[in-house]
Length: 266
Image (tube, rainbow, N blue to C red; front, side, top):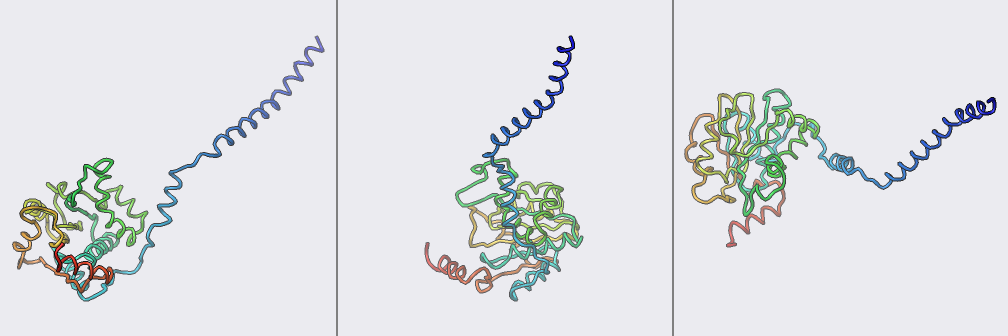
């Protein structure tokens, strides 16, 4: 009896050591099994932050006299039209001013919109839900806002509705109040009905910028931007600014490219 009892006690004391050995061996096996697993999410997040544009802490400064007039018009008018060729800074100036207004508390929300019209393409051919599809069309403004506010701030504002990006059709029924900065981009692709719907959203003391280039319209029939320019001419608190080819700041090559397309048959 004594020998059996002693044997049981000896085995009992050995069991924890055996369990520890088995646990460590199992742990090593798990580490070996997962050695080749790559966390794609963490790598994607790293790449997303590594190439994010550096935030600019300097106030917006115009690069030429045309931009100075355009910026001044936005700051002093309820509705401003920015017209002209690509590369003149229409979108950048408007986006940067919107970011400054949001950061300083002058406005509580930025609304970015544009007609979902592209040459030979439409939203249905892009993967994902509607908001994911439309984000492709508004990425240029997101880059501007990331530069002016910081990517983290922009993500927070998008999640909490401080920055809203939506197709033009979603503007129906909304009212733009005095705490809203609204930018309608690529307005040359609106119809007269769409433009009327958008313009009648404007409330008191809000700030609205409409940008477009009539030379790059992809809509057939009546053009909403051209129609609005005729109707809005001379109204109080409305400013129509025209950029010229010489106002292009993107690159000298862009000026030459536009010359070839506008002055030679395609």
